[in-house]
View 1 (cartoon, rainbow, N blue to C red):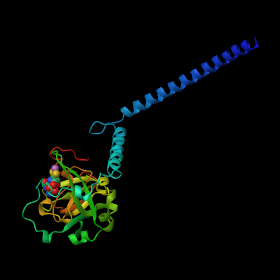
View 2 (view 1 turned 90 degrees about the vertical axis):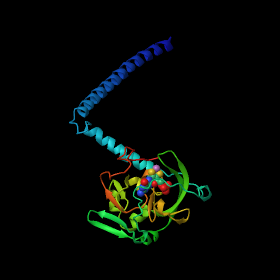
View 3 (view 1 turned 45 degrees about the vertical axis):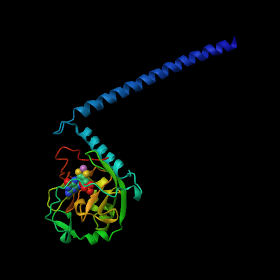
View 4 (view 1 turned 30 degrees about the horizontal axis):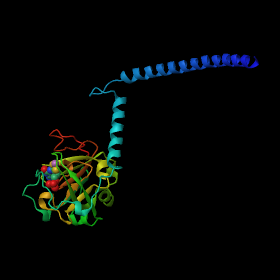
Length: 256
Ligand SMILES: Nc1nc2c(c(=O)[nH]1)N[C@H]1C(S)=C(S)[C@@H](COP(=O)(O)O)O[C@H]1N2
Ligand SMILES: [Mo]
């Protein structure tokens, strides 16, 4: 009897508490709904930019793009192989900007630190930096790939050595062949990725002429199109540098 009374009282209390909780839950839900609605209204009634996207959405997209490019380039290391796995006969592909009218002996690397201020270096200046070897699976957008072995200087080390760290705050690096006919633009995080090298050796031998001697780019996080052979000029930019294959419709980022 006692127990029953207690139990029914308890049930009443519980029913009261339940009603109260339900009221709170509905109020919270309703408040969230109103806040959400208002935010949505303001977001979508912002003046749109030229490309028809609300600025708040655009900035989120840009932040994501930056975050993703850092995540997939700097933090990500491409799989490396052992020397015997590298092919002895490396395929040659692409000869834009590789004309015969070129003298390796007088070649110099031009680094446009900023407009009107160009640093000029010799191949020995570059070879004086610590040598890094990269053996990775080189992939071309045409559908072939092969494990190849390259040697050179980390772009990061190079930029440090020549006091170009301020330039790494820029969004892109651009590279152009000496004749100006082949050119690439690459996001800074991918250039700073530790496996990216200014390359002067292949299979432990001096880089063959057709493979970009005296200096080419090896950037394992990207498809072959970005591995510019025969570097003439390097520059830095906050806007996308011109890119040979992007202009022909390929993905600008060309990441793997
Ligand atoms: N100067 C220059 N660099 C270039 C090209 C080119 O046509 N000219 N082709 C690119 C492409 S599409 C690929 S797949 C690689 C091939 O490098 P490899 O010839 O050493 O195999 O170089 C890249 N670098
Ligand atoms: Mo390629």
